[in-house]
Image (cartoon, rainbow, N blue to C red; front, side, top):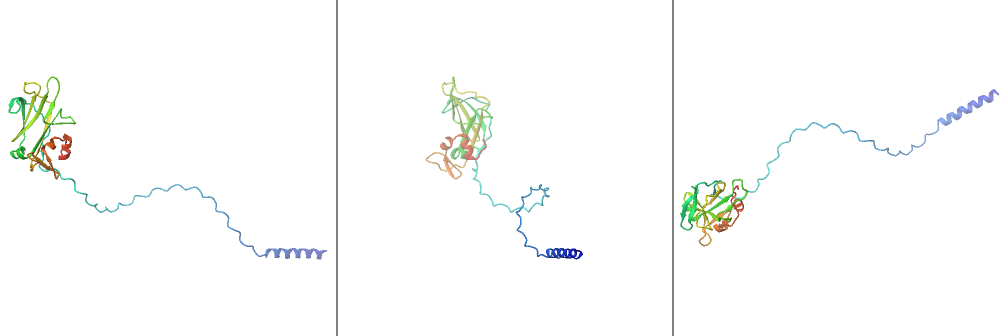
Length: 219
């Protein structure tokens, strides 16, 4: 009986040794990739780096349009000295004067002089003279005549023979002198402006804003 127990223990030991020495099997396949984890918080902004060197200067832009040389224009002014007078082609009228040293004999014979009237200094529009006003009971025309060293302004009532009016003192006036006239079309005076010839009548047919734009004048 004792011998049988010893043999059983020996057989169990041999089985254990055999199992322990069995060769390891091959590695199994890799498992699937797990889900991506949440994005982490942004880190703090780094310090501003040093300023880079100044870039090269850009190319020079094209030359702007040429202004109109020798054009002279007055600021807006009032006339408060209207008085009775007589003009050869107007008869009895009211006149007033404005010194204008820019008006020379050459300007009168060759240049172009324009004049404008506006209701007041704050007005956004102006009328070229001669300007005709029609309102009851008196209609009148206000115009101008260049003279050496001055501008002569006059007004005449057109629906009566009463002469002229003492115009409202709030009215403002302005003149523009374009000297250096060139040979015009026929006997009409003309001026070259920005490479183009304009006759006196063409300039007088323009609105005040058109003339200011053409001559680069601040209205």
